[in-house]
Length: 221
Image (cartoon, rainbow, N blue to C red):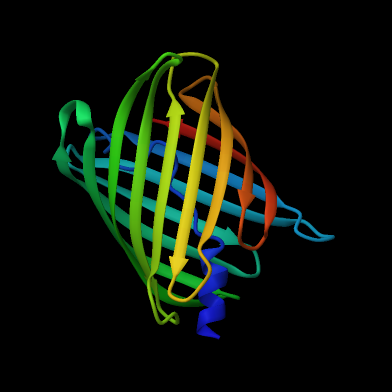
């Protein structure tokens, strides 16, 4: 039962928003994103939602909240903190993140914790400025015998224009399970009041296999 639960939980691990990773928030600055993904693995539709928030508590400490839910099956609630590790100048930056909270399977909650390292680098391309983020995380959820290992990458453009492309690649592994991945090409749409919309197509190797339509709204404040 524990291994089945772990495989289901792995299939719903989500990468951080594109703005996260190795970058910290300025003191007093915040960020909020609301995400929904619709899948149709069989004759009925499936839905996953996520809420992600960050706040710059000090210049060297960003705290946040990560909520993820698939109604009736699984989800998690995680409080985390991020601190800088190294500033590499033009070669990027590295940050350490740790957090704790709980996860549930069919509404039965259990503790969980997470630690991770993130690398981020600004990019200067022929199409404009952008960024690259690589995130490694170890998550352990009680009721599973081994931790999850996650390696995610995000690359995108951040030019001051209406539309910008972004690509997210998420991978996850649990001992003796199949290697799982998802690829999500998206378009970021700049709106008023520091808002951005994300529209993407997610292709998954794990349940719900196939394709999903992803929507998100993000705001800095």
